[in-house]
Length: 429
Image 1 (spheres, rainbow, N blue to C red):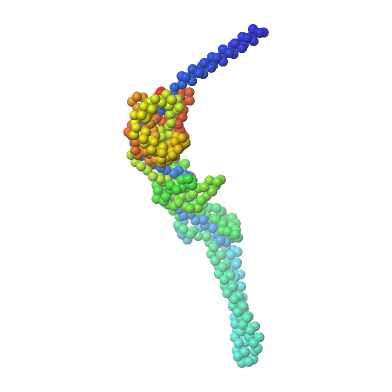
Image 2 (image 1 turned 90 degrees about the vertical axis):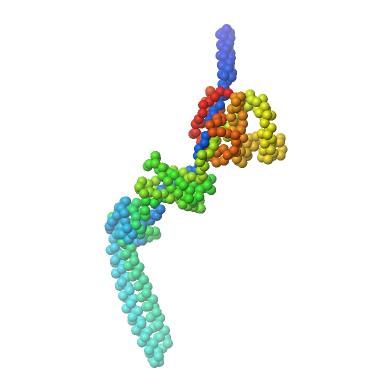
C-alpha cells in the first residue's frame, strides 16, 4: 500500500511539473504582434442617426358631428377625392324629424309673439287714453318681451336642426387620397363627446415627411436645411433623400430617455414611400473632402508594458536626440498637466490633449523601433480622424493595435465602432 501511495504521489508531481513547464514555456513563446494600417486620404463626414416614421405632410381625420347610422359610403381605401365630395351619408330620418319639430315650435312661438305684440299695442293705447292701469301695461310689455325672446330661441333651434341635418352628409374637406376607412354601412356612430373618425385623408402623397426621434445628446448638431438620407425595410437597397425642415422644441420622454422630434421633408414622386413606414435616418452634420486621415484606433493605441520595457533605451535615445520635441512636451505638461509635476497623470494628460485637438500615433522607424509622432487632429466620424498637422504622409503605416497568437484579438478598440475589423497584417515585434 505504501509503495502504491508513493508511486501515485510521484506520478502527480511529474504531471504537475510537466504542466507548469509547458505553461511557462508556452507564455515565453507568445510573441506580441503589431497591427498596422496605412494613412489614407479621403472624405470624413459627421452624421446623426435616428429612426422615424413616414407620414403625409397634411393628413385630415374626417369625422361625424352627429350621431346616427351609416346609410351609405361612397369611397373606399386608396380612392382619390376632391374637396367637397360626398364620402358618406348618415341616415337622416331622425334629423329630419328634428327639423320638423323645430319648425312647429317656431310657428307656435311666432303666433304667441304676434298675439303678445297686438295685446301690448292695445294696452299701450288704452294707457294713453287713461283707460288702462300701469300694472296692465307692465304685464303686457313683459308678455311681449318674453314671447319675442321665445321666438328667437325657436329660430335658433330650427337653425341648429337644419345644420345637424346637413352634417348627416359627410364631405371631404381637402383634395387627397383616402388612406383609412373606419366604418361600414349599417354601423352606428355616436358623437356625444367627440367626433368619431370615419376616414383619414392624406392631402398629397407625392410629398411626404419623416418624423424622426433624435437623442438629446445629438439634437444640438441638427439644424434646418441639413441633408438627410434614409432607408426603409420595403426597399433595403434604395437610399432616399430629404431635407431637415424643423426641429421641434417639445421633448418626448420615454423610460427616462429624452428625444426630440425632427421633421424631414421627402419627395415621393414615384409613390414608393407609404404612410407608416419606418425609416432609418442619417442626418449629415458636416463633411470634409479629400483630407488626410488615420484610423481612430491609432490615436487610442498605447504600447503594452512589455513592449515599452524592451525599448526603454531607444525611447531615451529618441528623447535625447530631439531636444525640441522634449521642450514641446515640457511646455504642454506645464499648460495642461498642472504646475505640480509630481501629480502629473499621463493618461489624464492624454485625454486632455485629445479634447484640445492633439494626439499621438506610433510608427516603426528605420531601426525597426516604435516612435511616437505628435499630430493635430480635426474632424472625426468615430472610425477615422482627420490629421490637420503632423509628420505623416499618405500611405505611411501606423500602429493600430496589438495581438498575441493566443488571443488573436486586437487589444485596442474604438467605442464608436465595436464591429470594425481593423485592416493591415500583423507583424511580430
